[in-house]
Image (cartoon, rainbow, N blue to C red; front, side, top):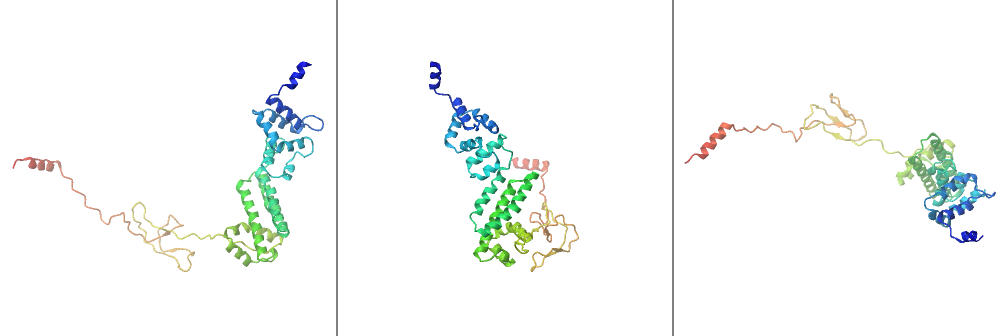
Amino acid sequence: MANLAENLQRPMCGHCALKEKTTALLSGPDGGINPRLRPVYEALISGPRPQTTLYWFTRSTGPATLGAMARDELEISHATFDTLPADRTNTYLRDLLTALGVLPPFHAELERVSPWLEELLGTLPAGQSEVLARFARWQVLSRLRRQEQHGTLTHGAISAARATIVVTARFMNWLTEHGTDLADIEQGDLDRFAEEHRARALALRPFLAWCARTGLGGDLSAATRPTTQPAVTLSDEAGGRTSSCSCTTTRSASTPASPVSSSCSTPNPWPGFVACAPTRSPLTPSASPRPRSTPSPSSCRARSTASSAPT
């Protein structure tokens, strides 16, 4: 009996204290470890630094969420995390449960789009929020889900989807500021928006196409980037050699994007460039310089003998 009292009064080591706290945290209503959280229990008590885990128990809100799941107060699912704040603690806890096999695999970046969208919709008026929610969920998010199912979802696709939603929200704000309803917009309104916000107009194309299909708007088109390439002049000289081509190239000054016409019969190896009349390369001399005469050995000996003779 005395030995038992001494053992109770003796301080526990870090591993023993961690095991005791983890058992109390993850115990279910029946007093045992919740079977679904058994992998979490094993991972926590087998950590190399029990003091760090004990510190996490006292400083983070993650253990409280785990305790609520162990007591069946919260469902152990991704849907539960969708209802929780999308902060760093819940994101870490969700990734931990997924890595341990407690939750099925999921695309973390894609799952964060939904709570971000809800926050964005909360900043918009009711009419704009309703239209943007339908477009984002039925068009943008459904497309991302299909890409995830086919294994083709990328970070760039998610970033582009976010940009489309943000630009659409700003466009609807612009319509409200100008007193224009979405059903009444015309091509002129869209052109004015493109002039004021050139970088945003292209991102509106999915929204405009969706509006046309659903009957919310007319058949409008966003401004596109110019597809004409600048005129480039390329000389036919290569390596200091002049070309034997004697062509003339003309382009209409009034229509800079008109096709190039040439009277040259020589095939052009670069069809995307404009060949000009050949000119002599400044690196190629008009006439080869006269080579210097190299003195013969006999003349060198004669001059040497003459210079050494006494006068």
